[in-house]
Amino acid sequence: MTILYNPFFLLFITLIVLFLFRVVLIKTGLIYIAKKKWRLVEDCFYVYQFFKVPKFNESMQRNQLYHKVSVYLNSLTSVEDSDFTNLLTGKKPNEIVLCLDPNQIVEDDFLGAKIFWINQDKNLVLKIRKADKRRVLRPYLQHIHSVSDDLDGQKQDLKLYMNVVDNQEGRWRSFPFTHPSTFETIAMESDLKNKIKSDLQSFLKARQYYHRLGRVWKRSYLLYGPSGTGKSSFIAAVANFLSYDVYAIDLSEVSDDSDLKLMLLQSTPKSVIVMEDLDWYLSEKSTAVSLSGILNFMDGILTSGCGEERVMVFTMNGKDHVDQAILRPGRIDVHIRFPLCDFTAFKTLANNYLGLKDHKLFPQVEEIFQNGSSLSPAEIGELMIANRNSPSRALKSIINALHLQTDGDVNIGRSRRAVDEAGESSGAFGKEGSNAVKEFKKLYGLWRVKSSG
Ligand SMILES: Nc1ncnc2c1ncn2[C@@H]1O[C@H](COP(=O)(O)OP(=O)(O)OP(=O)(O)O)[C@@H](O)[C@H]1O
Ligand SMILES: [Mg+2]
Image 1 (cartoon, rainbow, N blue to C red):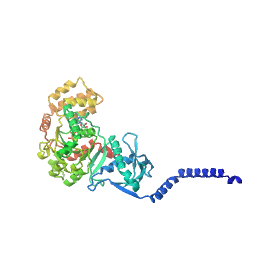
Image 2: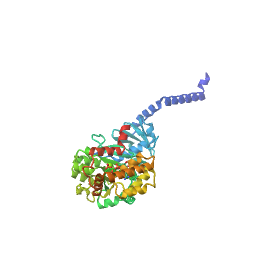
Image 3: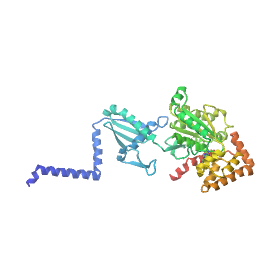
Image 4: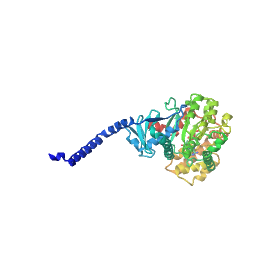
């Protein structure tokens, strides 16, 4: 019995009990409950301060800090320790990313201070000990800025925003932007392509210059030309080139001028803002927005406070019947004409679609193009895709189609050329607005997104 009074034996027994207790705590999850309770006890001895980072400001503009903080928080490994975390597919195939669920708390350590973030509805709330605040808060926020900028810098997935009616999150709803079009895949005169690229690049570097002139830092492009000549594909190429998100405005879903203003306010910097088929909307008066509403929008007056770059792109089938106020320099900086297919564009398409740099039928194709063609790159592209397994068959079908256009259907061919040369949209070749919207959505893969969701 004396062994029970042996201090070494007692110590041994105590250690075993403690060890078993710890095993039980860990295995049952009691340790987490204990940690939580301990935090409550600890909280009684500290005064905390709270900082709210709302998703939108009072004008319902997106708060950039909110975006940065959420990018930062979702990159923290401690998100895993939160009670409830969302698992989402990442940028790369098979990548899974963690994303904090509403009402969850995530813990962070910075310069020896404990910082808590609470994900409330449309707000992220920072909780910090008052004693740590003065020492830690500023450097911590700077740290968040630089980490999220780094993560955003690596960002490869762009977003397509579409205006929807009744969206609680503001006027825009976002979808992944996956359009693969690039300047390399667009058939366009290479001189023109290079000029546009350098125009975009020099615009990006011109922040100070624009500010000194008291101008809004934006650049507007007008793309005009017949249907199927690559205007929408070009917009996607610009977005991919700049790594900018795309805001596509469906004018039929805009309720009035102030709604349009609100949409511009709620767009984020570093984005391409797109208004397709503007000539159609203006001529058919099929939008509730007035001409002056559109002019103000084009001037981007409201975004001037943000001081961040935006590229605006407007598309039209023809610009002859459009109010000159819309086209005046300063409002639209660069006009780009998208012509029907010529031999140079054909060669680019043949290379892209069929992998053909040269072919014995090329001289024949060139000859027909020299006599004038009235096929769009879209039509030529379709023939190539349909016959992609046999380049010779593809070229023959293109030669046939070009012959049909020039010989058989002289009237249509001529009138379509006239449309192109005059840069004019006639009723016969103008398209239905709803079709335009449908095509747009199709182009940007929206149907795919919808059906897979
Ligand atoms: N210049 C081009 N270079 C490469 N592909 C082109 C070109 N033009 C058209 N295409 C192809 O044709 C299809 C339709 O082009 P796109 O939708 O960009 O034409 P669009 O000018 O916007 O027509 P619309 O005025 O009818 O909207 C796309 O799949 C695109 O790949
Ligand atoms: Mg288009």
